[in-house]
Image 1 (tube, rainbow, N blue to C red):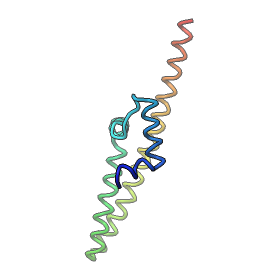
Image 2: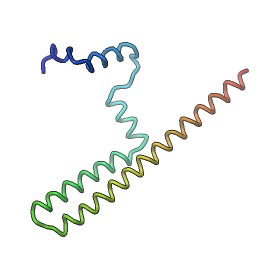
Image 3: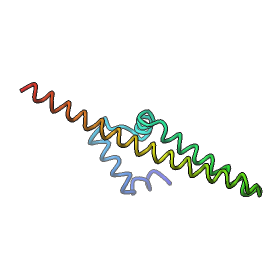
Image 4: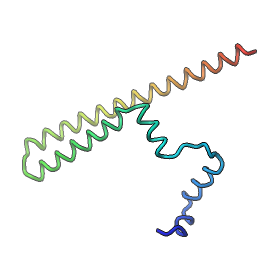
Length: 112
């Protein structure tokens, strides 16, 4: 796709307008790094899930039914772990934001 065609896309124009409004806005790579630091087990769990799924499909294609079944069970376990970690991380982030707001409110009250 040429640069002329990219400028015609609405989402590209929207992204450029948003960047011009807030030059300090984090890029996608910066956001990914920040999220990985906040909850490193979530992307690791996703990687493990995809790896186990891939190996399970390879085993299925080779005809190794026992290993394929084992890998599919392991995939379900890895998915469950990943979802649990994502939920726990979200809850912890929400509590952190709530605590920061409470601290800010206390600081504002003490200034008065």
